[in-house]
Image (cartoon, rainbow, N blue to C red):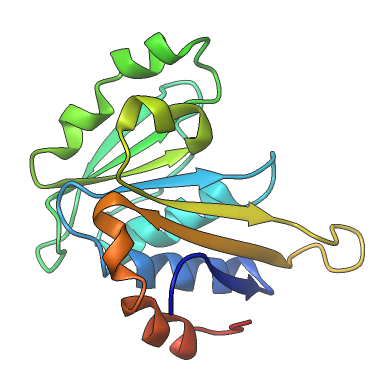
Length: 171
């Protein structure tokens, strides 16, 4: 299998499940960029991702805080989750000032909502996940997720074979 990988979710629960499967394959220093319109499911994905890493308590979009850092559970492949939402940043310089690249260097993984805005500040190595609601009226919970790995993710497309085969609702 090679990038991109497409997967269809029929519910928020299925989106959270896929996010958990992605999180389990992350390594310290990884960056996951979430791309999609308002209401596409970026925060739902981040919640499933965080739950899989053993983050306690509720995970909400850091729209106004911009960045939240969570300690992960003992069994997690990473020590911390950096959850960012760069929607309210006004420029690439403001995104760079958040120092997301530096935060993931120390045993952390980053999930960035509105990731397309942050991508230039984070370098060439990321897993970009685009979430689209193709039919918001007929099937409001349905989402199509397209995963594309670059840089350190480029050679990991094979690990997504089993991930998608076992996940609820693969395309």
